[in-house]
Image 1 (cartoon, one colour):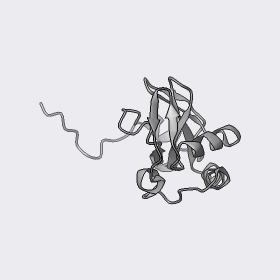
Image 2: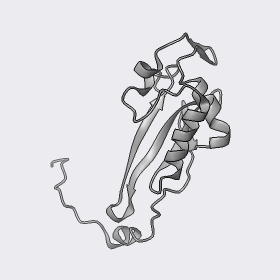
Image 3: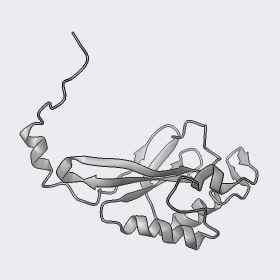
Image 4: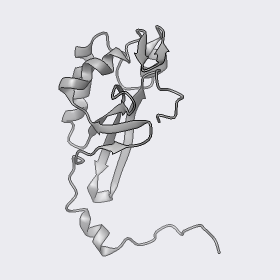
Length: 149
């Protein structure tokens, strides 16, 4: 017996009916794994610590340390904006994400320390197509290569 499924398997009526009830803006959710926690971004509290770990300055996370680094090369080069010279610039960018009707930016937080280490966004949410994407994902070099992603 093959493990392959044919394309076009019909969805049940109850799944299809949910399309009309799902919100365009994803509901806030907190998801926790062994290394990181994804929680709704709090612009008032998260922007400064996120900027501190994404601006190219030396940073510390528990016992992990990184020296000065090229923030463009390590984080921002393939993102739509950044690097940001100050927290206000990062805050404006993140506010734009938060205010977009079908996006929900989440703060990626290190479970062991509770420190913000990046951002992931539920985006391109189109309930009528039962579709959502993860994107606009970035992590500080402090957790790159650690299994945080």
